[in-house]
Amino acid sequence: MTNRILLSALLWAVAAIGLWAQPTTESLDAACRQALAAFQAPGFSVGVIKDGKVVLAQGYGVRTAGKPEKVDANTLFAIASNTKAFVSTALAVLQTEGKLRLDDPVRRHLPYFALYDPYVSERATVRDLLCHRLGLGTFSGDVIWYKSRLTPEEVVRQAQHLPAAYSFRAGYGYSNLMFIAAGEVIRAAAGQPWDQWVSERFFRPLGMTRTCTSVSQLGKMDNVATPHITRTGNAPIPYANWDNMGAAGGVISSANDMLRWIELQLGKGEFRGQRLFEAGVVQETWRPHNAFRRFSAYGLGWSLGEKAGMPVVSHGGGYDGMYSRVVMVPESNLGIVILTNSMTGLSGALSNYILDAYLATPDAQWLDKALTRERNGEKEWNDRRQQRLDARVLNTRPSLAPNDMVGVYHDPLYGNINIEQSAGGSFLLRFEVAPQLDARLSHWHYDTWKLEWEQTHAWFDFGTVQFVVDNNGKVLELRFDVPNDDIFFDEIHAKRQ
Image (cartoon, rainbow, N blue to C red; front, top):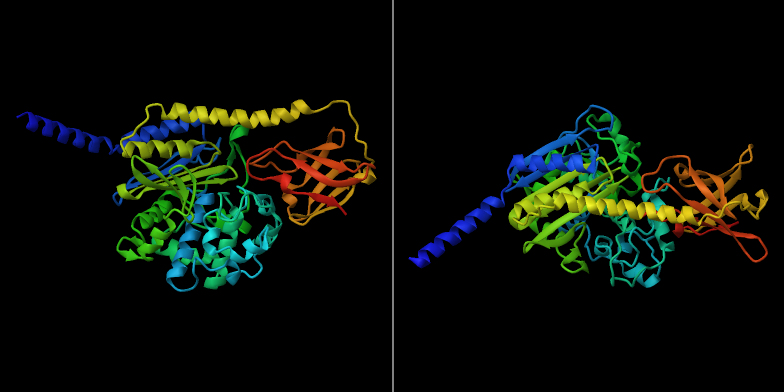
């Protein structure tokens, strides 16, 4: 009798856990509304698929702050680095078709490919491009492509001038540049641009009819969300053109369309009775290739982790004014996508809540903890800016005459930067390859000048440039200080010509 009671209790407990692990559409909707209010975001869309059925596909908030148009599950957002999984999957498919091998040297397909060391340049493989282990630091070189006129090939060629941050295949450094190179490998091996290949082989068969790969296509689309800079009170900004780094982050999609992509991934290449690629493709991209933290690794275009004893496949995306998140638990047949038009932690916090709800590991304080992280991040950002403001020395004058400053400054990594003087006497800084980054200069202190950007930028605002002189007062180079977490102007060492 005791054993029967014990068995009954155990079965009841297991059943209760199973019930708890299945949140309702209503409970998910409530959490979404809480997140929208707590993060004070303009809007977002969310999709959840479980056991092949869409549980939730809905929008919250508005497409543009201050305007009435609502977000829905078909609203378009930039998914940014969630593009990388499309590119890595494409290359794995091309391997099954005999067009290339992932272990091919990159130079077999891109003879011009070069990095910081000849040994690395010769031995770097296509697989290396896809798992962030080639020795470049996280986000190193993003300043090359950001808002520049360079083509993808020209961006890849410039990577040879970047220094190593760690030894070849002996560390982790998240590299957008290497995924740009991966896109060029698709062009070389498949005979067509990466975006055309992905559109024909993935978007069309999946019915992802609203998904595109360039902001230039948005003029023909309706129901498009607007990017916002959150630190300035959710100020709307124009879309930035990321065409030259599209293979690393150029896809624009909706929650409904992304649910189809997730369904294909969870189906290991099969979508509603149609097989688009071999199951081994997913096994290849989901396999750990580069461990960087305990229980964390990177596959090919996917981040890999663990939750409640089950593998979790995920990725985030950060675009100028928009963040996104994709999460999958293959063993639970669960997929989540969240697309936002703000630069907040909403997508990560909400996706973690939904994940916890399904895996029966809920955290009652999930939103409070997320908001604490958000506030800490804001404080760190403001502290870095304030440090520069506090260090300013007032009532100083530059030691250099205008003729000493005006001229051409060249960096092999970046190209030419011109310092000009307007008819009114003010100084202008012109980036030849990226005129959208042009700035006026206002004196800060000594021979350092503040950058008064001509455009508003999502990733940075305050910045200075110093005219570095030798012992005889001759200008040698420009030294930038633009505090931010991605576009590293300090990698530019432009010397006076």
